[in-house]
Image (cartoon, rainbow, N blue to C red; front, side, top):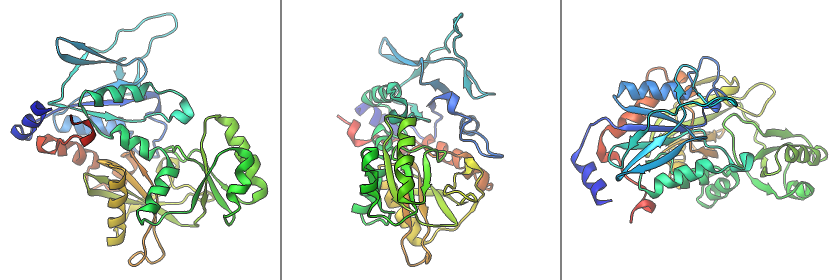
Length: 356
């Protein structure tokens, strides 16, 4: 750790290595119309800043150590398709050339982490844990990801810290749904507590009568799903704010899709730039700080009187997509601004929990 601290005080404005971990077969899933997928935006921005980028697939990826040096091993990656090339049933495939990483110049950038409630797979958790245990800087940290992965937890945390947020209750099992929802006015929002970037698992339930069968149906789709009931607030649009290092990089308005409760750009919602009020800036930064997020997307519903009343903070996304915000804020590159920040090693601060 002392060696790392010494390095970041001596070296400034130097290129570094970026390891982008992801499930490559999810790369194109959340891409909206006319948006570039994240892996392309990040690769382009990395090359622009002379950053050596390595794409690592969670499945089949592993870390090795040889003579005190660490290496990442992964399947080959096709930058044109955004997919890793995996072995077929009747054949083998060579892995990429081992990529050397070290504490002094390697940033770990996990993307597309699965949700254990849906996948029941924790391989990617183990991978990031192992890197954090060795002292590598990861964005986000596993702690931040874990906090953001539960909408119910975040909702309660926001409430405890005086942020305005929709009323939310967890559903433990389907037969308990009606009791949980008895304190709500219908319609209500029913959603998975462990979130998805595409708005999958978000349903408007119009009546108590239709609540129970809807909960049963969603539970059948995934036995491990955690559901929450949330107050329905009728809106025309919501706002996504990209917060990096306690600074707002960009914000965009996302119009609600006609006949839907969702505003995901990847589902076709129209987006546009928006000027935030002082209250919206303050609460967005506070929400990001509460989850320890170095790079996060804060989603909120604007109040009717934006200048005087707090927004409704919906959630914080620990791995925000860049496609929609880049398309909307054409005069700047959010991705490049984020990556270039770390060219100055003074900005390489580790989470206190990793220090010994």
